[in-house]
Amino acid sequence: MAVETEAASPEVAKLPIVVEFSGGLEMLFSDQRRHSLSVPATTSEGKPATVASLIDYLCRNTMKDTRKELFVLDDHLRPGILVLINDADWELEGEEAYEIQSGDNILFVSTLHGG
Amino acid sequence: MAPALCAVCKTERALIKRPKNHQKLCKGCFIQIFEDETHHTIISSGLFYPGEKVAIGASGGKDSTVLASVLKTLNERHKYGLDLVLLSIDEGIKGYRDDSLETVKRNAAQYDMPLKIVGYDELYGWTMDQVVETIGKKGNCTYCGVFRRQALDRGSKMLGIKHVVTGHNADDVAETVLMNLLRGDLARLSRATSIVTGSSASDVKRSKPLKYAYEKEIVLYAHHKKLDYFSTECIYSPEAFRGSARTLIKSLERVRPSAILDVVRSGEDMARLVPGQTRDACACKSNTAPAPVAAEEDNGGGCGSANGRSTGGEMAAMEKQLRENEKAAEGMLETEITMAKPTEKGSQPNRQPQSEKEPKTSSITVPIIKKQKLGSCERCGYMSSQKLCQACMLLEGLNKNRPEIQI
Image 1 (cartoon, rainbow over the protein chains, first blue to last red):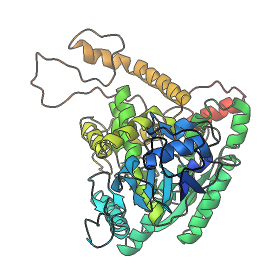
Image 2: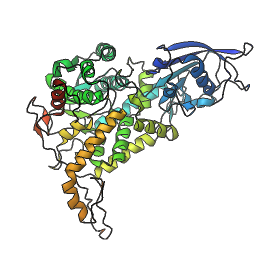
Image 3: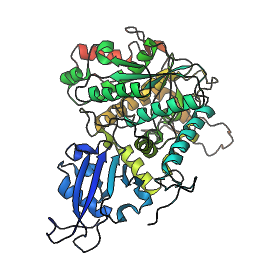
Image 4: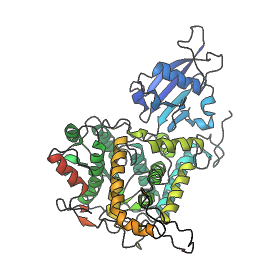
């Protein structure tokens, strides 16, 4: 996963996106389902932001819970968490390599939780 | 990436990639296929008869919510003639079950089904909150699992219903297969793969119509149909879902999505090699297998979500019980094994006696460990292989305030 510098410098362009969590993942993100975020359009290496860099960004900036391992395992999204990019399975969109576009809606759904 | 089109209708944009065959489907075609496949499972295993009253074990979670929704749809579409009822168990856990029961109440209205809620307090005189207050958090899942198992049966009886369907999915079954494989417990593995358990000798039979449905597709079905479900972790085992078998299954799926159904099918094939086990609803079972008791003990532990999502403590408890089972089966085992070679320490009870000198036998002889005889609990009358059923044993311990009791 691409590594991003802490607190992106102000001149970096931002992408407005909506990130949603459901299926129990809300609990890792302040019990809030919908997060309107403005994420850096490029990584510290100057590459376009991808789902991989978004996951990293979420861990660093959005997640207040300390149990990061419930979201990320071995530097990748934890198996059993589904990602829908504008309602489409991320497996159809290139998974972690998908380049984030302005206005995207990215939904993380856990299949791991019971009920 | 250019958006892919649905492989079926070839007009809509594909939104789903099916784990089992990589097929790309649009929302409408996916929903249709998911329902058709569930229908196929129901028909091919002769799960229901017309006019049958069926209770849906409903927790408010994704699996049981999808099950209720799909069964309602199929019952109307294919005229099963089923009388569907939602049956929920209230363990008495504040801040957990009371919230999910609200979801079930909404589901009852949405699906126009009657709802019956059975509480641990009325059945056992203890809520889980009180149990945890007495014994602490450690090991409480065992109590909850044993109580729930009976509660579904007792709730069904109150409603005069003899068939409970549960939302167990392919991932759950694969996980159970792997766990039992790792333990060398073929008998249990066999029971876990059956779509119907506890059939003829039991008052209430269980079945899992979503047995072949991937958890991923269940979640996507719920998402695309905008079903109202509740997902949280039980406050007493907040990390129960990190069970190692679960993690293994999900990691396998990531590498090769068909692995889950492959494990389920392997489990079914292995089950066929286990003699004396129930073959689903088939009545021709051998007289050695008291299926209901066995089935009852399948889910001996297990937290709210599904079987096998176990905590370490629960695993340890099961291991202990398994060791006791082995001990109990030892007499029989030795006669089996000494035929071929001297007994080894720690040999597994289910191991097929290997005798390479005589490869003639066409039938496979796996020693059957069956020490239980079907009777009823002398305290509550519930079916049990012991004098007291598991629930009454645990209750006795609780009532004496001796939480150390092990099942």
